[in-house]
Length: 154
DNA sequence: GCCAACGTTGGC
DNA sequence: GCCAACGTTGGC
Image (cartoon, rainbow, N blue to C red; front, side, top):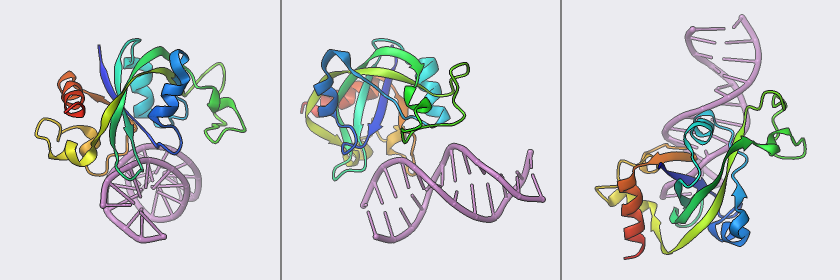
């Protein structure tokens, strides 16, 4: 099983929004970066666990856990001219963008902040802690995943 | 709101 | 296929 970290701006879609979706979960649409897409398309499997990270907010950090409920499918927003994620090059025959569907697992009792991640020896190498990192979907190791869960419950 | 870092686009 | 220009991300 693989582990992941996915960023989302809480103003746009927060962990509480995901929780409100219940068992149905939420398709992670709008990813328009090839590296991130490849992770979703090629490596994300049903049951994989992912850290939910709030970006662009007062205290950026990991706020909870979700799981892959459905593996990659063509991203419908890419073919919707009204969507801000619309891509005129997207076709049904040759879908360029995909999305996995995620289901809420848990919300941490507290946020594991980016500052904390950077300060922690075992976590400092995570992609999300690197300067200039903008990738919204990154793989994390099992050890990193478990470390963050442990910190969250301290 | 600033700005550094990065990915993408398009002219050549 | 290079690279400047541009748009976006996201911490601060």
